Each structure stands twice: as structure tokens, then as C-alpha cells.
Length: 490
Ligand SMILES: Cc1ncc(COP(=O)(O)O)c(C=O)c1O
Image 1: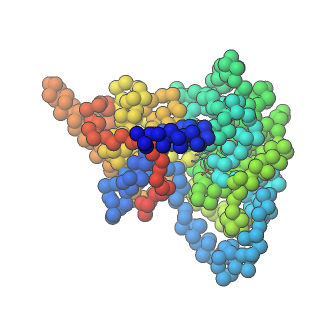
Image 2: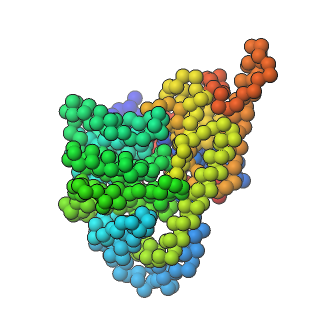
Image 3: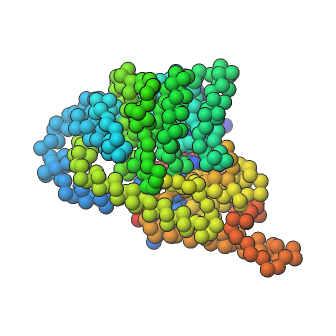
């Protein structure tokens, strides 16, 4: 009784923002992380544990980074070679950022786009990761209650990043597998019209290119059509391009920056790019996020707002040296793309041998796995049921499509770049064993019904409720992640 009373009092003491649920930590996307956190896989200490395949991290090229750090002790202010810089760097607190850092980031952004566009270092605004960059843009572009259109499926944490503290709302633009989840002008127009009828002020369109969770890139025609759309409506276009350098196969990446450079008519004041080093370089812990806006007022206001989420000057200093090393950056980008191509190929081919297909993709740190053929009813209830089996029995933390606001049930995002080759092998073997077990059950069931000489493949197998674990753990929808869900697989 006393506890409940205390709870009520503490709720009154906190702000509405502090107690609302808009952070989204109660979604299955984060529940999977909690399952991993309770029982993390380790090859020797916990070989039966949950393998983390829900975290889009790029861990394939750390050896290259470590090699560079060893060769460049002066880049750190904590080495005998670099300590003479300690005082200046520790004192530096200008929210414009270190000029060399901004020049390095501008150069990297250009390299990642094949040198086809140049970026102005004076337009680089820092923030705490792309998370901070996306929120900062919302604060600059929209008022509480205003909306952004976002094609689905979209990054699960956008609800937190774009809406929680800003009061902005997301209007989903539904895309489906009938055209490989491509964004169409018709779907955009329909979502825009519906928002107008509902008296919602649409301030912009946000796209993720390359897409998380699809791992696909937008083609030139689609990008041109999106730029025309936002120009006609006089609304903003925010392009989250944080996976730009994860493109590992053709077609090559096309950035909105190239499109607006070549287009005859475009109001550049409406165009803003979000970038970060979390995926392309594999440094999510450094919290380096970038807003690159073509709008002077947004650059000025964004820079003032960046006081709330600056990148530490120590990090800026180290990265300024790394990113201005052309030879290193060129080789790193090439090697990273090569390793991602190989990993993607190995993983998706392994799945194909079991009859599991993924949406064809050319980018990203994940694939979009199709398990629709396993479902009797294509419902989100069944999607969640199957997901619980995958997490609790197969012991793989993958993310269900519903957490990305996908309109079709039965898709799952599976990350493959946050672990070593051996862990990928183990994950594939677990899936194979699960498929085999389910096939066996199906054969026995059908034999009992009088069928014989059956050949059943995974793709014809349907998931049914009897296969769910009876002690499926029900996660508390309110429990926060106790600590960072780091992958300790190596
Ligand atoms: C599309 C997208 N945007 C933004 C983020 C956040 O990135 P950061 O770690 O730089 O904050 C992520 C992270 O997964 C993402 O996938």
C-alpha cells in the first residue's frame, strides 16, 4: 500500500515527459536486448546463451583501426608522443568544433560518396550520435504536434529520437513487399492528404538511405521524385545517411547531395543530411553525430543547440588525425565494404540452404529475413509468437518487423556484423537445428494423419502454436536495460 502511494507521489513529482512511455523501451526491439542481457552468449563461458543479432554494429574492421592507432601515438593526448597537446585539447570547448575535425568529417563524407560531391566544413554541426542529430533537426524544423512523414519499415528508435522530447509526431508511409518495399509517390501523396484531412501540420519527410532495416539503397529516380515532392509541398527533407559506407554491392550508393547538385530546380534550404561515425566507421561509443544542412539558419541554430550534445574534444582530436589520413581512410572503406559483402554472402547463403530467403539487399549491417511462409495466419500475433521461440528456444535475438512499423507480418531483421565468423556459424547451426526439429515434428504429425513419403522443406513448413515454449519468459514492459547490451562474443 505504502509502495503504491509512494509510486503515485513520485509520479506527481516527475514531469509528464519523464513518466510517459514514448521512449519506446517497452517494444520487442528492446525486449530482445534484455533477453540477451540476461543470458549473453560466450563461446566458452556461456555457449548456450543468446546470440545478439539485434544490434546494428559494425565490428568487422577493428583490426585496421587498432593498427592505425598503434602507428599514430601522437593522435592521442594520453600518450608520451601526444601529451604536449593535452592542455589545449582539454580546454577546448567551442561549439563549432575543432576545425581539423570538421575538415576531416567533410572529407570522409565526400569519399563515402565516391568524391562526386564536396561538403563544406563550415556546415558541419556536431551532436551526440545520429540520435542527437535527428532530435536536433526536429527541434529546429518542427513544433510540438507537427509531423514528419516516414516510409515504413523504419528504424525502431525513431519514435524515441524524433518524438519523445520534441512532441513531434511520425506519420508512417506504408510500403510493402509487393514492390520490395520501395517508396512510391502515390503512398506519399496518400499519407500527406490524410494528414491534411486530420489537420496535422506536416513539416517534412524523413528517409533512411541506405535503409535500416531493409539494407537497400534508394535509386536516383526515386530520390529525384522525393526531392520534387518536398519542393512541391514546401516541406523539409531529412536524409539519414548513416549507413552510406556500408554499401557492399551494386547498385552504388546515391546520396541526396548528388541529386540536388544535378537537379535544375530545388530549394536547398529544405535539405538536411544526418550522418554519424557509428556505422560507417564502427564507432557508436564515440557518439559522433553530424547535421549537415544546406539551410544557413538551421546551421546557425543547430550549432547553438549542439551545446547540449557536443563531441568530446579528445575524440575530435583523435578523429581529426585519423580522418585526414587519406591512405588509411581509402583502404578502410574498401576493406570494410569487402568484409561486409563476404559476411552478408556467407550468412544469406547459409539461410538459403535451409530454404529461408531475405529481401535482396546491397547495404547495411543486417538482412531482412522473410519467415512468412512459416505462418498460418499472417498476423502480428503469430509474428510475435514465432519471435518468442527464436529468442527463447533458438536463442537468437533478432528483431520482429512490427518493431520497425512494418505493415506485413512475418519479417525479421537479423544483424550479422557485430560478431566473429565462428559466432555466425553457431547462429546458422542453431537455425538449421530449429528448422530440422520443426520439419521432423511436421513429418511425424502428417504420418500420423496417414501421409507417407513426404518431403518437406522449411519454406513449406508452417509455424504453429504447439511449438512454442511453455515457459516463454514474459518480459516486464517497464524494466529498463540494466546495462549496455554490449556483445561479448569474441
Ligand atoms: C537509421 C538510424 N539512424 C540513427 C541511428 C542512431 O545512431 P547513433 O549511434 O549514431 O546515435 C541508428 C542506429 O542504429 C540508425 O539505424
